[in-house]
Length: 198
Image (cartoon, rainbow, N blue to C red; front, side, top):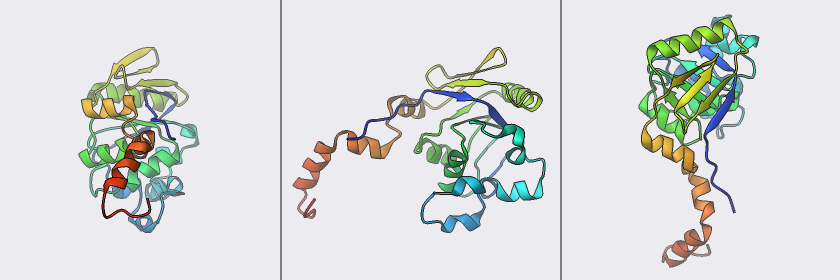
């Protein structure tokens, strides 16, 4: 049996990524959409941007191992590909903080347990500037408290109530939900006339 995996506290360093309307084509180039699984996508996160911009944060060794991504407005816009949050998570990102997120990106991120929380523009700017000046600055994000602590200050965060609840209860994990009560799944399947040999 699988257990539900609640998500609350994410601690680590951050990677700052300036720019509004960074779309999913930039997060993961379209040529990787033919992948049958999401394995290995992390290595290709922002691949084209890294190739064309030597100073891109994802190419900067100072941010290696960062687990929190700090972004600006409308992050994850564009096509509704699941590959974008998958690539970020497989790169090593465990939470995102930004001014706003594309609704589809937010949904795709939530279903893989990647919290995306919003903050006021001035707070996002402070977080980005802090990490740019000192990449090793530790941060602690709390889904429950809806806050992130960095450099001695606490920044309030926003998150839709349904998203927050699904993360805190583990209900973001659809497979975990099924496996947590598999006897009920089996009972329903056995009652269906078109399911044979379950």
